[in-house]
Image (tube, rainbow, N blue to C red; front, side, top):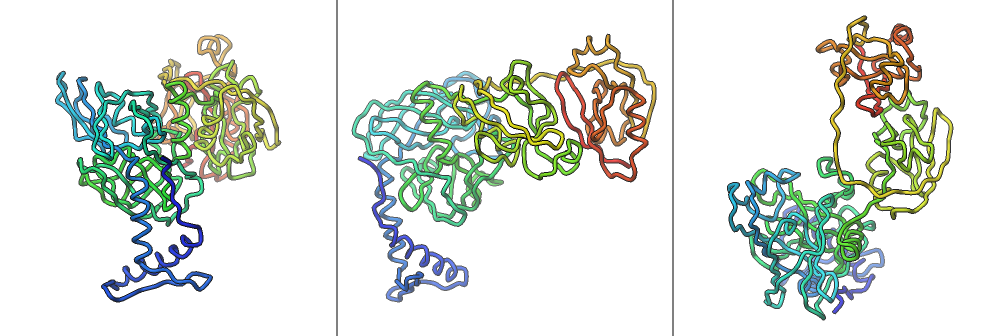
Length: 488
């Protein structure tokens, strides 16, 4: 049974016009009461009524609800608190679990069936650590489910029940979603199964930095509460265009700011998890940052959009083999214009591993093109930057003391560039300290001027004529970075 919406396009055009008039009337305090009739007129002069809007909501609910499930999980692992493991202020789904001891704990969430043979899409934070998973179908049956795979980086998961000919929902194209469209959230808030709420798309492409680089969320004011996690966000065609994942809340309940993972992302995750049980992502092997006017000036880049290559991860990374290096600005990847570092990371991650792509970039003001074959992105990991020793020898306007890099020091520090100056000390509350420069950083460039020794640095600093900020390229712990320093 395929869950599809059969209302024709013309009728939806009528409804959109009517919705606007209803919203405006409501904002003005105008009520609707039988037998009064309020109608809106579309561009073709045809009328649509509030009753038609109501029937549309009813029709979408009837078609999608059979595919929405209630999920109950049992955990026996030690957990101090669900809130303690959240990446955002409040993620709906479970109440806090446990007190750190080993005991049986339960939680609930929602999910949506996406195939007739029982594959169910939900959140990783709903089922990721579950020892037992039970699913209650819309017809009241409760069946056991098994975990197929999880993807913590997008907070998505796929589970499966051993049933056939199940009603399922169609994943729509969230890339076509526009701000202001009506949407419906379905799930089991506070355990109240098959609950439906409605609202609009408050924003698309919402970047929430603490959630990682792979998701730009759909924001909605449709009411989402604990227990809605993993349930579908549905458009007025009856298509799933998002998976409800988190909310911002001071009270713990819905305050009109909810977020859903777009279907354009979840459909790819489902494909990977069903096929391989895990998600593989493309990998360039670069450390990226967004451009600022000061950094763009420092690397002689005339544009405003692109992704700055701060450093190359390792010598055999795809980017290194393709000839990319620190200071390059990537402006196009596989035919797609690149506006920011996060966009490049997401586009590369969504590109099949092993695919050869064309990359356009700008180096010192010159457009360049290269081709590279994507590797598989490694699991997230961090390395602590090394701390270095060095005697204080001079202090300048930056508020730092430096010493020359000798061949011996370069070998000891395993520098990628064998010249420069080593920061031996940083003056507290000085410009360098406020910008984040640290003892042990190696300065290689000030603005566009290469720095090979102390004299180069002194000359570069003394030549500054009223600049409010400068960009310094450093090497720290084996990685390049561009630091913007405000000048006093």
